[in-house]
Image (cartoon, rainbow, N blue to C red; front, side, top):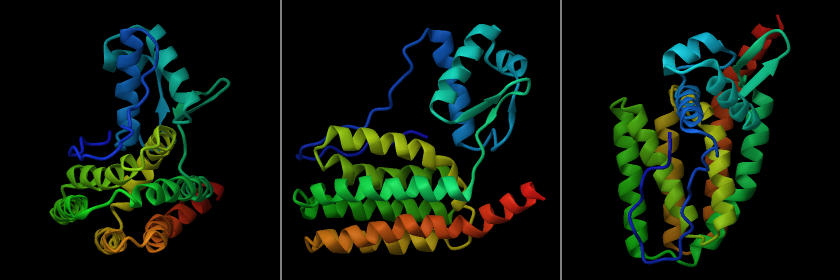
Length: 240
């Protein structure tokens, strides 16, 4: 799932653009299709990625499939083992904690830089965006809800004016997608989205950068806690 298009604001922005593989059209097509299926859960964690099946699904030969899988392995969406082939990278509590630790460092910095450019128009746009996210999630329109959720964060980080921060955030978000989809199935997810994001908005509206940073940190850590039991149980089952 890619960042949705945010409204245009008269502030310095560093658009988040996903890098595309510098390969042929067929390779890119297989890459994009397989990547999308991994992110939306069509190919769950640890799913074997058979060359013949991917080739048939994408109506291509094995050559672009192999190259696409190499690109996905480089991005850590896929793991390959000798004599076993490729499979979707596993989800783990350790990886989640590490990923969200780094996200916190980067996204809090982007938020702090953005705070100086916040005004009432921007605040109103954030309110509308997160209200739309909550509404869609409550109606079980998960994809639409998560699109709005991501746009909320994107709008703030673009306001930072830092191209490099936005580039790093984009990469980290891509690896967060599977965890966010998993978290969206937890019973407290919608309430946490509503409460945590309005807390961020309230602090930004007051120009309270420290408070906004604390609220963002709580939001990110909240996702880890929502998934702690589920991922922990999954790891115990695999170990058993």
